[in-house]
Image 1 (cartoon, rainbow, N blue to C red):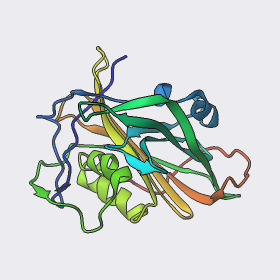
Image 2: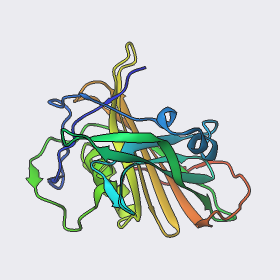
Image 3: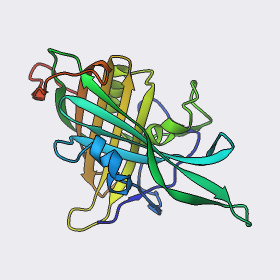
Image 4: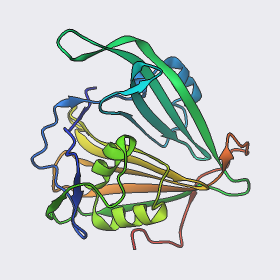
Length: 250
């Protein structure tokens, strides 16, 4: 199956009460998935039980100990924990000035965030019409997100405002913010999807939104909310609970 992502609109935010449209997106950038990560990453975050996942390749490179490093970030969310992985590979400058990889991707870090003992992940689902298309605002957001959050912020901007506002309010200042917008073109189930993780100390929220491959189509959105223990903290596996008291979005 082929998956594609759009070219990200750097430094663009969405006006309040509106959404960005996928109508004019050029789906011309191949996306990475967990199958593209090293075996050690897939071992730390195995496929069975996954509720939602995303992998992003950060633009550009960083310099570490004199070496140029390319980075990919990924998450996999489960009923009782979330795994965040960081993989890197070395780059070299070619004669034409472009960067080329040196060697294979390797796992730099894999962090497991367990839910707090005695709690369960809260699962909510809603069907929401595509947001009204509104103007985009140039320039960076009030708080610069950094390279690692750029794809997630871009993906969130395509969600209906009620979903986006609820999601952002749940974890307003994430220290880990990973996500993307993908198009899966395979017929007859061609569709668009958004997967985003917002994670801060003691709290994580994951949103999975899907719709047919049409810019005006209705989104089916699922949100998982986690109260977290410390990273690597052990807790027994607990079932996901569906909230019957909360109507989401409000």
